[in-house]
Image (cartoon, rainbow, N blue to C red):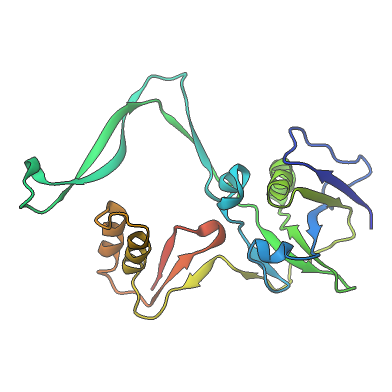
Length: 233
């Protein structure tokens, strides 16, 4: 199998051997020890959005990013919500107060959404590979390589030997069903209480509001979806 190895923390410029067809190449690493488990892959065909905990490239891939556009004038913008006692009256119930500040306009950069998949070839050798969509091949090859380097410190560029059938069965591993009867708001409260932080926050209040409506079950995001909850009707 022809392969081109890249080592290090990141690349600044994309460089692929001229003999490789960019429409057929595959990015990945060989599974030798815990390469698959490290990103949450368990079975062949599993696909996952990597957690943002690995570093800056993983965070940008999962959540996107923003930056201040200092070429434009500052604008009044909402920055947070605080829960306070009205007029300092501690005998009253707390109320939500929105906080605004003068800030430079933010430019939103969408998440790349690059996914990893556990692949097995005919010889039963397993690989963690990039789920190479047309968009990744055209726009995000450098980002995909940097994602692999951040997670593993190595990235192989394979020629067209690794071919993943589009009809192959895939199981996305980005969500976990919460225990029966456990509301996401209570789930978050327990997590927050365990680290001795306040539970009367706006985020928990939002979950409480949604839970007034009927839904069948709820799920908690894991890996690249950590911090998200979904309600299934």
